Image (cartoon, one colour):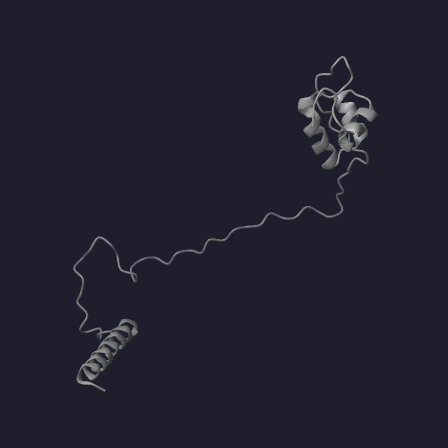
Length: 140
């Protein structure tokens, strides 16, 4: 080891020791002075912990459960929600702007018959749109 390397090594060791000592001092429990050495506070606006009344715990009540014997009747056949119909065209076809919507409706769970009823067209028209055949008047 050269003289410079040994000086660097020594400085690093001293630095590590200082850092370690600072960390130990940070987490070391502080020494409590005996009660005789504690300074007595001059009357302050904030009362000490011993003078404050004990807080009452907060207790939240839970409402009683409804008896299980009370049964609520659920309708067997719920009435379906009627959707607003799209403006029907005289030709009996779906507007070109609605072709994508028709495909989305059928792919998300509506039957082709329901979509045909919604648009007021024949079922064959909806099936043709679903198959993806060319729309009349629209080039692909």
